[in-house]
Amino acid sequence: MDFADQTKALDSTLTSIEKVLDLDSIRAEIATLEAEVAAPDLWDDQANAQRVTGRLSTLQAEVERVTSLRQRLDDVDLMHQMAVEEGDVDAEAEVANEIARIQKAIDSLEIRTLLSGEYDIRDALVSIRSGAGGVDAADFALMLQRMYIRWAERHGYTVEVYDTSYAEEAGIKSTTFAVKAPYAYGTLSVEAGTHRLVRISPFDNQGRRQTSFAAVEVVPVLEQTDEIDIPEEDIRVDVFRSSGPGGQSVNTTDSAVRLTHIPTGTVVSCQNEKSQLQNKASAMVILKAKLLALKKAEERAQLDEMRGDVQASWGDQMRNYVLNPYQMVKDLRTEYETGNTQAVLDGEIDDFIEAGIRWRRAQGN
Image (cartoon, rainbow, N blue to C red; front, side, top):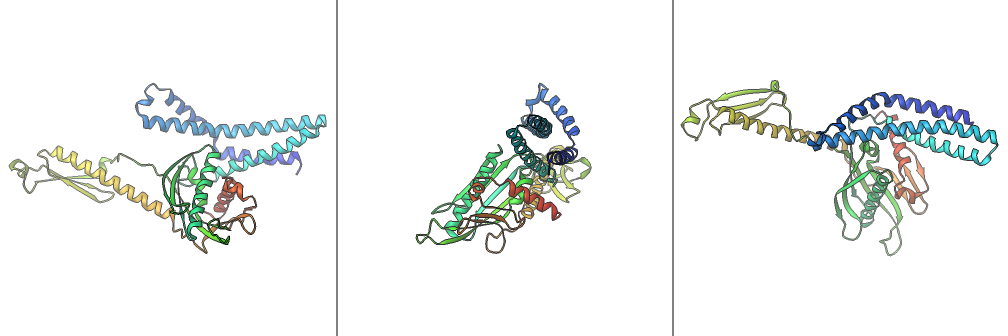
């Protein structure tokens, strides 16, 4: 493909990406957020301030990413014209290299447009546990943890390790960490599954080849709501006479309150106070706590469904890491592979991730 065809194809792809992302609406939201950031009372509510500033930073980076690619595409056209006019072979070679870099950047940006799932924009919670293979499996789990953390560091993403259970001899039994970045879940979700390592075991004094497994689970970090807002029309209020000990004024007036949350059928009551208003206020506190617990239980059920059942053993692996008798990392779903195993284990997994996202989209998932 000659230069004109290459740049035309890149321009067409980038134009499609710009339409999907809807830069005009993003810029409009940026303007709104900038006005909020300029408000003198912004930090009176720190949680909201962090949400606003974080969202603003994310959107500004998104626009900058697209506009800088557009500028590079314009610049490379000018570079090519000058190189041809001056007959500069070295400059023409640099143009070819820049075209390749732009192509890779646009391919990566295009992947973002494929992440349209309900939770794709969220942070990712990654759990890794060693499977079959004994100490080698525990060591492999540690290698995978390092691989994903190095991947995040390469992209400037924040990683927070919540829990690590170390194995007795070497490696780890399990680990859980968060990758905090926009679309971290949508991006890393294709990494979930069983990973298989084949190598000469450094823990076998006879130097035999060992096969081991580790399971990777990826779920979105769900937003936790500390306060439940209950529309008034969703609650039925019944008052009745208190029963049991409590004194004459408690037992002889209709001060007890029963609240029924109509959408869920949750019922709570309070009759400890003398005042109907006090009982109603106490019952509302209890109802909110119950509804919050119910919401979290539903979220856990969603996470369990997303997590699936990863066995970390023979027959269900999605990627093989072979270090002996040859060097290769191969994804069994996408067929993408590379012989540069050390680079992969050092966190260079973008090509695997992008292939996985495209594969998932092709599957209709």
